[in-house]
Image (tube, rainbow, N blue to C red; front, side, top):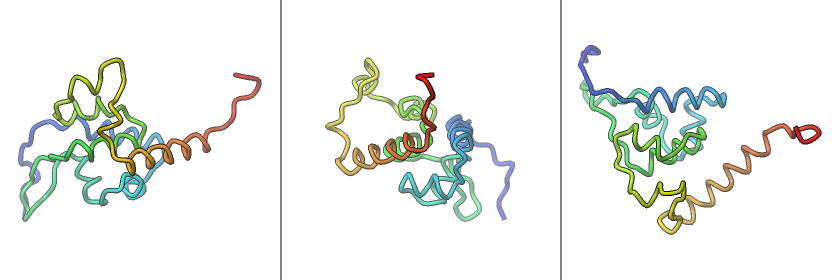
Length: 129
């Protein structure tokens, strides 16, 4: 049996990712599927800890995992990294630009496809408004 009162450091990323996911109307399972991560990993990202043999361990996701989760819920990746305690390289955030040479072709294509799906679900504006 585990002790749910066990204190862990703050995990500010979780509530932000959860809020963004809920605003999009996505279930945790669907968000995890779109991000290419397991349901368990998505739950860990949102609550900030994982249970192993009844003991809580602070979430410690890889930067790539945080980026995938953030993109799925349209949350700024650099902010997500900071909230997760991940050091963001200076050159990745200067002038809002990202060095795409560091991102795999598969990840880039996935992001383009995701954005096309999001754009397709938006209602067209009438009379330019």
